[in-house]
Length: 67
Image (cartoon, rainbow, N blue to C red):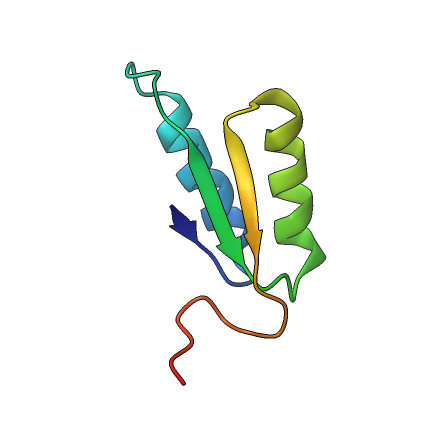
């Protein structure tokens, strides 16, 4: 699981880091509240190429939200 919040550059780095590993039996779950369309654009680009990436949307709630 990768948590992100308006950091498209770091999201791209994290995804590339997983994809260059030799171990191939993985699933990547991205959690974000999508304040920025740039993060969404990065994720959509990767999801087109890698079917093992999924997203968990938390609208209006940051990834480290604590009630």
